[in-house]
Image (cartoon, rainbow, N blue to C red; front, side, top):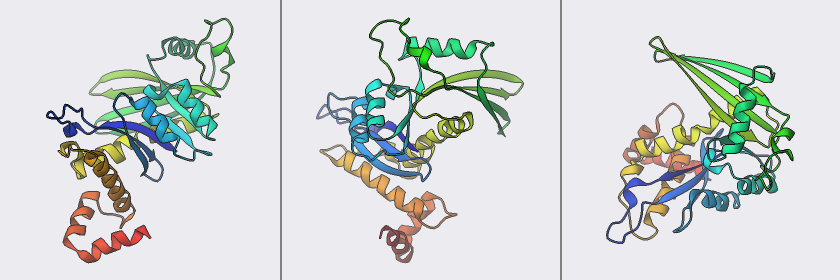
Length: 269
């Protein structure tokens, strides 16, 4: 599974040169927890078009590509399917007509659909997630809807995840909606939606905490983008090194011990 997401290097802005902070889009292999590629968002570009440039560099055959609602675009979906992959995108208010139709469908108590339920309990909270999928999506783009409606190419399912959280006697419910070109079962939707967040927890968070990326003040020329690539390469190598030790400790031991550093670098063959 391949997750795509953007990140802004907050301290890379340059007031003197009047340049904004660098924003990069990364492709992350969620199962292996390895960064596979990065492109910088160019001047006058946005994360959506930058993500398409990145996806165009990768072989997506047999790959499930996940992204947040920003990337729920027909052009991005077409690119992924043309390159042999499938997409799974969150559906939010940037597609208002489609979101309203999907919300109405899952809110109808008379409709039955495949479901899968998981329960997690930690830190004084109990979270119950109910995952629902619908494989009949022809009605979503019927002729009865408005003309020239943008379609999601190859759409195979719509999905809904209802998260019910109980904490300190209080209860809250949130529903999230998804579209995918892969005919996912409810169990697979649950696994894929959760795995997507590894790009935040296993990449972006680690880069900020263990590599101080958000505080890096490199600003000139291609320095911020080049160093962002090097940090991801270093994280890939460290993550594959000796297990049972945190990334921070591996970094420190590599600086203290030439032997340990050689053992880490030796994996790059």
